[in-house]
Image 1: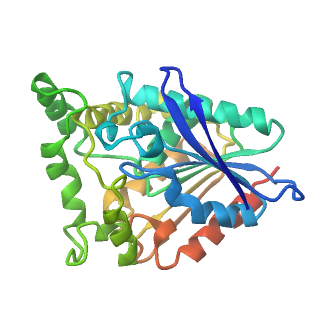
Image 2 (image 1 turned 90 degrees about the horizontal axis):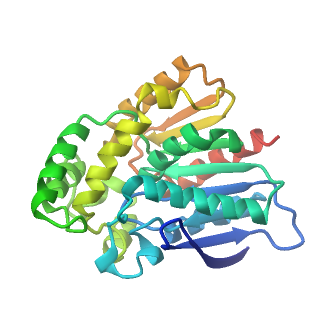
Length: 308
């Protein structure tokens, strides 16, 4: 596998750090997969996924979104998306995708989003879905009962706090409870995976599990209102293949229930090619689960089946 990194300056002048993995030069890649990571993590955590995809003949890109990883550069910038917020972060992803297109203009293009990355992907396919060959949504959801509360609380806090201030109260209300149904003796982040080594490595990484900013949660609530607006969901191309998967014990989507809500809506919109799978016993990060090899192979099989 060949690996490299580069930066792309987005529309606000922020340098977005991008990882690139591709097959050896003697192998012509089948297609592109652009990975969108989740909240409070970074793209390097998907290196093992990229390795498997490259081995299967794909070229893979993953960017550190605004306020994350090497794009944030320093922990003091972690968790803050910038003055143009969630819409700016989405435009940054589009900017990276446009650059990828210039490198491989003739290859099929798949988008793969996990957690917050899957929310970015939901908005992406509403605006630019016709440019994609398919989309994969991991650990995703289609409803969030707390979004209005988060919006109101976040806006109230921002009257007194700076946008980049740590969201201590919101974190306590919205993030900390994710671990309540799991044994947190080893780690408070046991909700991520049954493989507790994953949580240990996550806990030890300063660029994982950091506290997001107050403005982030306001921007997240705004994004949910936009992407779950029926008029916007109706813009998704009917012929765009969509793969959904999650763990059966994923607390971020009520153990798969709210992912199914999204699937049901997409089906009612007559999106014709929908595949979904719930991995029994799996938690939030199926790419880091005890059965991750099965999950990754399922993704490769789906990609192969949807090549033009």
